[in-house]
Length: 419
Image 1: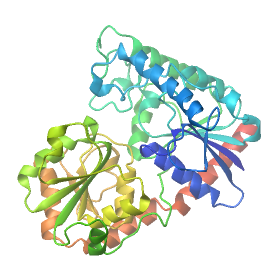
Image 2 (image 1 turned 90 degrees about the vertical axis):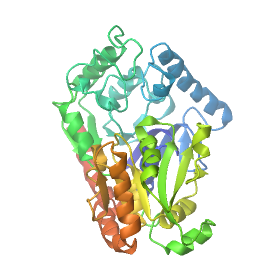
Image 3 (image 1 turned 60 degrees about the vertical axis):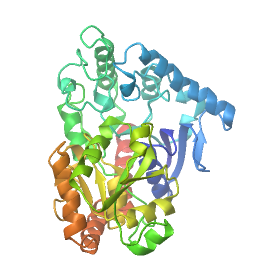
């Protein structure tokens, strides 16, 4: 079976990591040939194919699509803080011109915003007649353009008012136009199968105005079996030149400044904690944050080996996100046997077993977040969590389990399309 994977890039963000891991897992299966197409090739991944062509020139050319989208949204955005949280899908690549679709049995879409596909080029792909699987990594497929709606539930009825992301929420019709256009596209498509990574996202999609009548499947993300595993905590600390007798709490995000990741609640929790230091992975723009004594900033960590050391060096991983689908970081932490503390919301709630594999804190409650960290770090040995964390990971997110589920889905989608 020959499959074309399509994602915006090959390394940055949860969707890219999840898509690349699944592609690698499927390549191990007998009878599968997977090509991984991206608009922006940033990682040193020989398996990724940059659309239009290899090299810097084509990378810049594809990046211009992303810039056009951002400039277009500039006139609508509520503030620069939400600039990358809403995608108008007005610029994109016609895949039919750059991929020989006829040689593939199936197209598997992942995250295709930021100028990879516009709604126009998405429509062209739908009309190709090829069976298409689309794994949703956020809420964009059924909203008026936002990737996460946060406290807004307009997507269940009509995105006629968008207070979180648009400058003139009552007058601008951008969100409503996007929602209506998507509804029309989905209504006409017979060859599209939708998949969510979490039960939470599946529920949101089923409750939405434009996907409520569609069958939406749920299949977890996976990790390759040898990527993350438990190792001696002291050994991991030595490799990272960290103090062997210090308790470290880990926080990971592409951008620490992204408000949805809830870093401000982690900062607030510091006032309730003693004798712990936070390891922070991700980019930071706020200089005053960098000067916080209890925080150790590691920047971006691209090496899987080094990231594995960090998870193992930490006594606990904390994820104070306000809304999230199925964070790869929780999978990685569990695979290393490291417990997780997070807020009781969205897909995070279905991943953490309270006081078994971690601690579910009351939503947006920094003090209870600190209680969870304190409960694990100061009152319990990390070793007691390794077995339940590994068991949960292996029983839900192993490569064999997820590969089998997608294999069955691919065969069914192709058979249905042929009929």
